[in-house]
Image (cartoon, rainbow, N blue to C red; front, top):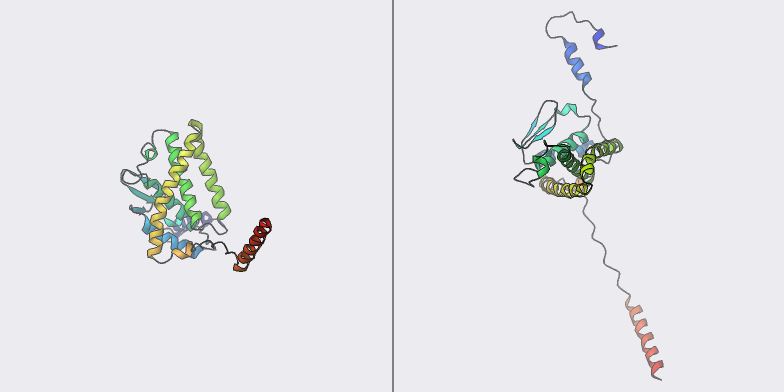
Amino acid sequence: FNIDQLEYTGTGVDPRIKWKEAYSRPRKLIASNQEELEIFKDNLIKSIHVPIVQGGHTNFYSPSRNEISMANNDLFRNDLQFIHTLLHEGLHSTGHKDVLKRESLYKYHINDFYRGFEETLVNVAAVKVVQHYGLDMSELNEAFHKNETVYNVGWAKHVFNKDPLQIIEAMYKAEEAFRHVKTNIDYQLKAEKVYGIFIQDEVEPKAPAKIAEHKREANSDHAKKQYNKQKV
């Protein structure tokens, strides 16, 4: 049945209002790597060095206030979506005049080229962060990447249409922003002693195997015999 089919005859606040609000919210999906996502989310928030204001229905970064606004947590379908959105806005903040001084951030309002440049680079960097820490290694993987590819292509076309070479510049800026936030995230994860959950220690390549001594001696004896033959 539909909530609207219910009749409220009591006094006070109509409970159907809250029921409708709860029903309209997206159902929260618990991913198979939920524990890792929650740990990363908490540390990501701590790693961002600008104020984060949660509440409302929109997500954006304000250069003038140097502040990130995030929608209510229950409006996100899952924690991966929350993490990626916060990464996206956090990466916008790296363009601030006191950090990477990115032109596209301050000219964002001028035209679609600057908006496309800024949106493309921060979203490419955000996806790279997600992949670097293995946050997409769950049943959310396919839907997540499909959605972000569509987003990136949609904005990148504004850059490509003006100057295809600017796509390369945007990727350079994306790498620069990625490295900046990665440094802060790594520091925070290590401080909380959870870095190893996301990044395994790199195994150093083994040194080339030494040639067996008996083979060296055999080769040496063979060389001497050959020399003596030539001498005779």
